[in-house]
Amino acid sequence: MIPVTKPFLPKEEEFREYLDSIWERQWLTNNGPLLNDLELKLKEYLDIKHLLYVCNGTFALQLAIRALQLTGEVITTPFSYVATTSSIVWEGCKPVYVDIDPETFNIDPSKIEAAITSHTSAILATHVYGNPCDIDAIQKIADKYGLKVIYDGAHCFGTKYRNRSVFEYGDISTTSFHATKLFHTIEGGAVFTKDPDLLKKMLYMRNFGHNGPETFEGLGVNGKNCEFHAAMGLCNLKHVDQILEKRKELSLHYFERLENVKATFPKLNRDKDYNYAYFPVLFESETLRQKCMVKLELAKIYCRRYFSPSLATLPYVNHTDVPICDDVVKKIVCLPLYHTLTLPDLDLICRIIQRTQNYELAAPAEKKDFGLQIADKIETEINELLPKKDSLS
Ligand SMILES: *Cc1c(COP(=O)(O)O)cnc(C)c1O
Image (cartoon, rainbow, N blue to C red; front, side, top):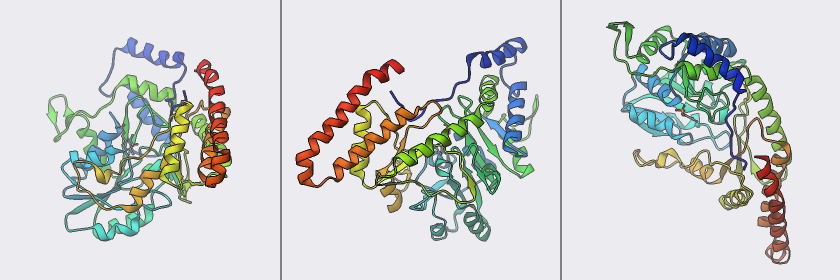
């Protein structure tokens, strides 16, 4: 079985060392030494002044919205994971969708101004697949209209924008350290800001508002994380450069092998160092995307439609016309990408896609004559590979 992603796991001994230290101290949560160490090491690694480690990436978004005291309408992208929208609604604001750029799949800044009303308080945009938004254009609009900017950087660990961590941009940036992300702490997330007042506010908010054992600074809930998750983070941080390197290598192989496939890939922001967090493919048609997925599943290769559905179609939002997003949602799929994906497996994925396309694009007469032959060939190839795959996993 080849899944779309596999969580990175360090050697058990590495994790056990941290567990032993937890048992020794019997300090499990509430700002323990491992959590402090992880925050420190993350700041070093990302070369960033401030961050707060929290329980997950969705809470990070909620915390950002709360800390900025957003109200009314928040302009956002329809092309992201559901948490980008659900956190806006959960915090009592109304998401207003702006269509995406057809080449980067990030929110299209040229369409933001038309969506601004007297109720707009902020822009919440996702750096989709770890590829930075047009940060300058978004900031210019925010400055002009006095709006706050939050970036959902859940895919961005390791991405740099103009030689700085992309987490430095916006009033607040957030990220997720969920097990499926490039760098993870099983569950976890973080908020980033350069504003010391905002930082202080979020620091109290993540811990019930406590500023002493029996005193409170303000309203807060439980958004903190624990020693066990911090331990996983400390282990994984030691391997993250190698994970980034491997994903890049695999992605470059994909590009090469898919050269003749009628598909496009997101256009990367030229000011960035990309982290290759995902390998999205935008097929020429919805049919081709569907057929490729079916053929891949026959070979027990499971891709994921990041992102489907369009968030502008969720049952609890005002449905909005976002034609580019709707089109992309139909045609896009993320191919398997993880540190232990092998080149033979990657080649197989690409061959299946290539052949499915060749068959789809063959003239009707050709299809009739040769179609079965080609289809058979794919099936044979898949069948040959199946037993081998099982013994591998
Ligand atoms: C994963 C993800 C989140 C949510 O993060 P969790 O840590 O799972 O809560 C939010 N936004 C995007 C874009 C994501 O991919």
